[in-house]
Image (tube, rainbow, N blue to C red; front, top):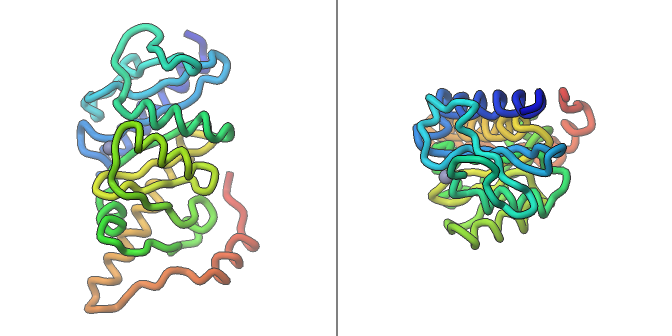
Length: 213
Ligand SMILES: [Zn+2]
């Protein structure tokens, strides 16, 4: 195993532990993958593993062209969705899927989730929301949106986020859940509704700030 792959395994494992420790997945939930461009392969979390105790060697290597497992292990059941995102958008090098409860709860309720913070405006934007679906249909729907957005919320399920690195894909989920908590906290104060940023404010943010990476 080369140094790049070793580093990729370490980062992916750390991201899954972070998702669990921050309440963004339950212990068997979520999955993440990244492309190993040099090997024309991807690394993905294994199916059904305890994410708190996930080890670097538990990650499953999959041939990108055929989708076949290289070596041992059973890949996440969401492998198809991950592969379809990479194939639809060549700028994507990592995909993270989690179950952030506040964000998914708001979107499942039909709440029109806007843009609430400068960080969200700069790094995420407004998430796309789709009805609950699974398998081939999920892969088809998410990949059809992945050129227009970098996050898709699946009602009654979770969120998919992607980007050039696994940390950036992870950050999008954290930023959205933070904004969702802010909306709920504001709305809990007796009918006060947290307004989303206006289009003009979002444009101002994009003009005045640049992403920190
Ligand atoms: Zn899920």
